[in-house]
Image: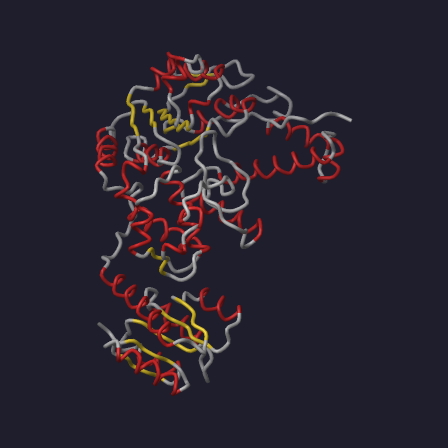
Amino acid sequence: MKPIWIVDDDASIRWVLEKALARESLETRSFANARDALTAFETDTPQVLVSDIRMPGESGIDLLQAVKARHPGLPVIIITAFSDLDSAVASFQGGAFDYLAKPFDIDKAVALIRRALEESLREASVEAAPAETPEILGHAPAMQEVFRAIGRLSQSNVTVLITGESGTGKELVARALHKHSPRAQQPFIALNTAAIPKDLLESELFGHERGAFTGAQAMRRGRFEQAENGTLFLDEIGDMPFDLQTRLLRVLSDGHFYRVGGHQPVKANVRVIAATHQNLEQRVRDGLFREDLYHRLNVIRLRLPSLRERSEDIPILARHFLVQSARQLGVEPKRLSEPAMRFLSGLELPGNVRQLENLCNWITVMAPGQTVEVKDLPRDLTQGSPAPSTLQDAGLPGMPAPAAAGAPAPIRVQAAPEGWIGLLELQAAGMLSAGQMDVMDILGRQFESALIKTALKHTHGRKNDAAMRLGIGRNTITRKIVELGIDGARDE
């Protein structure tokens, strides 16, 4: 094991730490300034670096930045007599393992250095990650069955129906099926049929001709045309309106369709992959889903296991999501201690993999320190209380709920740390990391819908007054109300 380096211009601090660590049988090496430590880095490296923040010449923050540029995995503990917020923020933004204010309790300082040491040794024992992360992670037998099915279907164009609870990764499997199919070089187009208002879904799927309806000022290609020669993924197919099911059945049967307002058939060479969290057989019995369409879609069925059925995969998934979240935010990945990982693996997460990803996003932003203990996890989890619906699909506080019906209750956080702009950035980051397509369109529609609904509520439904207060034209708000499927508007 390498020694622990101590960098401090105060000889008494160096002496106290040296003696305390020697009693723990830990070897040390001390430096009176950052420049000497940086020179030593040219030929050697420590197991842990402990540095004062304010020293003559280069500061502890300068040393931290230089060290992290060369050795990003090295734990660095910053100590200072200036226990102010700016120092703490600068330390953590620079990638410090933790922050210790002088005067400090020597036993607590040693305990913190021990934690950093354990983390450093654990990091050194982990093999380097593969250059390319697999699109789907899982060692559990239930997931191996899914992988085998994807392999068997790799050279097929057959229609596939993916079932499973919300958050189990149905779109990831659809993308994997496309990636390993003969259509891999062609478009993969995804559409959540539950997220599009009923009046607009037909146009989204099949496109429309110019003048087909108010606001259709130009011909628009639908998702079927966009996916030509490729794959069209229809998520939440169980929520598709009954009349549109008939049109979809005709495309699957005949291989062509008509744009809204069109009279010329358009050929469709598209592989359809559908997904749902609902029981389609029950919806057929209830008269809510066409039986003939069900049989057309249910050629090959892949059932994704819930996270409860593959709890042994939680550690590798959690580590992956923590690294992914840290990369998006430009910070060092946080790590779950062994007790925290065991605690997490024993939870029943109703939101499945998506909820676990949300939790890892929360940990990256909110948990103190680089090693996360059980006490650092959200209180709703550690106290066993049900999680209220204040954190949405991206796992972030305060965002409007874009989730489809049946989405699980997510995790609560107490406050929005960076305002709504910061939350919007994290929402977008979460969607992009999950492989979501059309992020700009989805978030833009949610933003516009929220503004218009709020303005209409403020003006008691008077759309002209709402348009004036929003600073947009009367025709614009009329068109948006139709496009977004907003109810409750009236003319003056």
